[in-house]
Length: 127
Image (tube, rainbow, N blue to C red):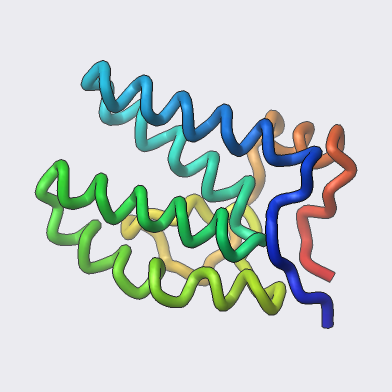
């Protein structure tokens, strides 16, 4: 079993770009676009405990900001346990991370995210 820790240096810039786009869209009041970038950051970082947990923290904060009880309640266990699942390599690949989807259900990757994983030579499926 392979234990995952932090984002590979090749993947980190793509993850950080999504978080920056999230911040920009959120600041500009474009909440739907902001959330989309959080979901993409989640998919990019979900194999790595710190990145994964950080995105769930941002999603929890977002839930509070938009006063969504569903998102807040859904993010608490994801925030507490998502990083643990990452650490042992058991994540549902492609899952966008929001409370509107089952936490353990894998989803198809968008082509652009597939291309990022291919370009950075990062396996999308934990070994």
